Image 1 (cartoon, rainbow, N blue to C red):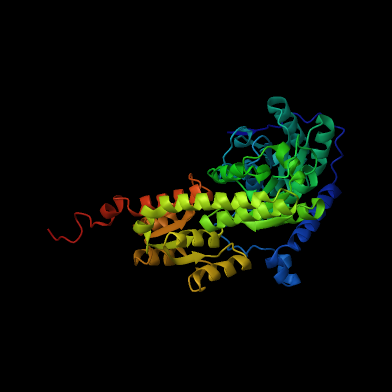
Image 2: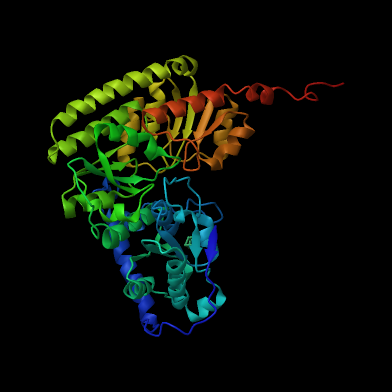
Length: 490
Ligand code: SF4
């Protein structure tokens, strides 16, 4: 559902700061400084390897006019924060911005569903002329009256930024008036790429949310997980393992999260940054500000899941948890690995030697590559479009060569590979599914639109079962058969 707030009166809020042109200029310059600082991220090897000029350009490749691009900075911020389920996410801009980003991921909730309601000020021509700040304030008030959420996140978009609407000032005024956290997410789409948007969203959490509340209790086993969005329930596939070890996810940023959890994230004893450099700034600053050590890990595949559990246990012990946690973790890993290998056995025989074309942006390629190799599949090619230098190194390490890595693959080339039967299945996001269908080749959704969790030991089993189902689906024999009218001159 998308709620639209209409601006029918403009009589209140005289106490809001007078609208002056310098407001927009100040907000823009603050945004510029923030972007520069994010692009200087010391923990990001890729940024640090660039020279000053390239660093300034950001991480995105120049877009080709007319070609479908991968999402703007606003989109990146929205998908990073929208999984906080009890918060109202209000988009200040034309309705298309909210329409484009709403529901683009299957980030699931175990409780509140407010995050599934789209809120937008639906800016129109009159707002462009007169400014949309009062309309935004009214929208905030209406949300509080109707839903009373623990917080409202207000997202800036291109149009509102270009006319100089100062969402930070409106949020500040609303915070003072309503006594609630009203958080400005100042990430207009033109600021840069989706990845940059995710980082700027992280900055907003650091500035306005993390450290503002206290948990009722703390334990030596509290962790934070960063950049895990619970797509299709991935978090729930990994959480039972942590539960068995007595490890508590104090804050997951941001899949299936509650506002209060994120606000208490500073009390975690250790942090895991999952599968993405998107929020590395959050991990680094949690370490700097609150002394929370972190590591980068993944819950995709057997060995990566085991390694992630080991690392979590190790960091917790370093921070004061009893040493017996290490032994318990090893016991759990041995138990779970034995169980999952036993259940994978029938699939290993059926999938051994099957060739996979891997075209993924959302999930770390090395992680999926190693997971598929674990069941004996052969990778014919893997895209490294959004991967970091470290990701590339890991793929080379796992595959022994970089011969099968590619940055871009035009649909025509993808079609040729599939048509020439160089791959038995393609794993990719939804956008390239039609290439596979045209080539009459099985296809499996590996990105954020999927409906099946692939994390943890159970997740790998799910992935393998889905691949097996897709490859051995009897429909392919029928689809590939010549039509009755082909090859006959009757
Ligand atoms: S924020 Fe800007 S680039 Fe992003 S969807 Fe809205 S108008 Fe488009």
